[in-house]
Image 1 (cartoon, helix red, strand yellow):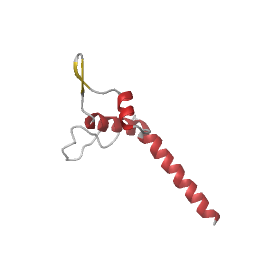
Image 2 (tube, rainbow, N blue to C red):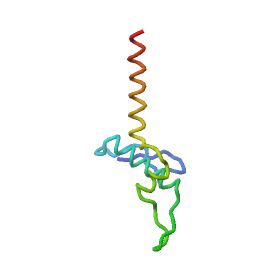
Image 3 (cartoon, rainbow, N blue to C red):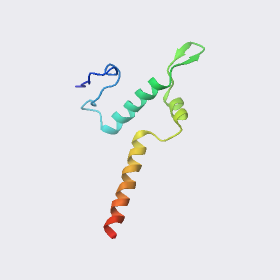
Image 4 (spheres, one colour):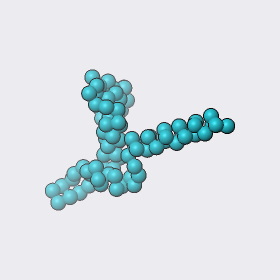
Length: 86
């Protein structure tokens, strides 16, 4: 069951993941929802269309949210490990 907060975005962005969806997948889906809304549709021969994942990735020019979060966690764990050695 997805619950929504009472915000203007509640119809667009679910707050809690579905029970069968792992958290990393939920974060990727959530990131794509935000990017799709941020980068508006583009004009093509057939009319307006939503940008695909490769186009969105090219526009943001960085790793996805799961890779970024994992890297930050590893940096923090390395810091904690070094602090114990002092």
